[in-house]
Each structure stands twice: as C-alpha cells, then as structure tokens.
Length: 111
Length: 115
Image 1: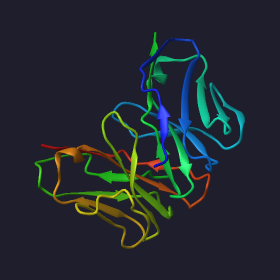
Image 2 (image 1 turned 180 degrees about the vertical axis):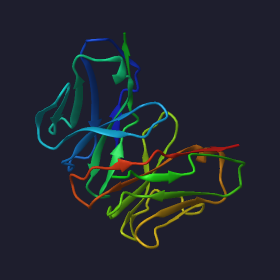
Image 3 (image 1 turned 60 degrees about the vertical axis):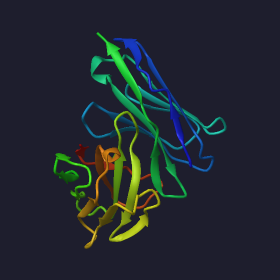
Image 4 (image 1 turned 180 degrees about the horizontal axis):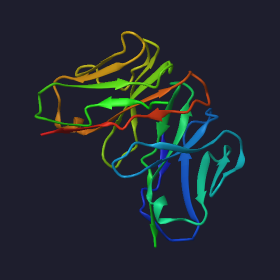
C-alpha cells in the first residue's frame, strides 16, 4: 500500500512567520505531487502542484520536491491567521491513476 | 462555472440502515471520484469512474458499498447496511481528463453519522 506520511501537528507559528510543512511518500515512480488546504468542515482545495525536483513558488507559497529522498515540503511565508487549516500532501499513484493523500498537518497561525 | 454538486449535506442514520449519496460533477468532466474522509484522516479513494466505466474500485467494501454512474454524468454511492465505522465525510471529486497533471475539483461533501 503506497503511503504518504505527515506530522499531524498542530504546528503553531506566529503571524508573519514562515510555516514549514513536510511530507514523505512511498511511491518511487510518481511524478506528480500536490498540496491541498482544508478548512474545518470544508472540502480540500488545491494550492500547489509540483512535478520536478527543486522549488516552485506561487505568491506566499513555495513547494519543494526532492524525488531522491521522496520528500516534498510546503513553505508559507508571512503566515496569516487565515492560513490556519489542515494541509494535505498528496501524490498521484501511477498504478491507480488517482491521488493518495496523507492525513494532513494542522497549522495554527497565532495573531 | 458551476462546481461539483453533492447532496445531501448531512445524513444521520442508525446502523444497519441504508443510505445513498448523489454527486453531479462539473459539466464535461469525464473522471469522477468518491473519497471517504474519516475525522482526522486524509481522503481515501473508494472508487474512480472514467465516463460510465469503473477504473478502480479496489478499496470499495463491496459487501456493503456500491456505486454507479449510468450515463457518464452524475453518480450515486450507496451503503447497505451501514456500520458505525462508516461515519465519515463522503467527498465527490471530478477532473476534466485522465491526465498525470489533472486537477481535482471537490464537492462540499456529505457528512454521514451512523448511530
């Protein structure tokens, strides 16, 4: 069973700080990785996708991928209280052609 | 563009009863997914359709769960009989095509409580 491992948290950071979220995955073949944000009681929404080793930046968000280490991370700069949510890491299971999700890391940004 | 529609939003049933959930994907989206999300966990794929055909149902408990997508558009997920451990949010998602870089669009989900 291919898996995604995430620290459940909560990760607490002060407003304006950088939040760092980490994820490891077991599928050595997958080429596609995703970060979803899920507010309490809401459905997941895609915030970042990354397919190549290195960094990908989008506004305050930076995704980092290291395929050799099977590691993907998400950095949130200038964290805001509105960023408080659960962040789900996912990869595309190439065998099943569907996303496999981790259990998520709960982020709390303190005003 | 209308999003993925799901109903009902909430459902409370007793164990051994049956329940059905409905999903209408974004217009034109060929691929439809049903995920189960238990509190504190990430979504787990139950079944995936490509048009009206099943692509993957390997994690669907087929002794009690069934799903169909008869005309390749909307879909129904049924549980019969329900167990306590089926309490979860059932998320429907769709994507435009079966691509490696496809983006999933999720519906608002159906929260099921089995008492």
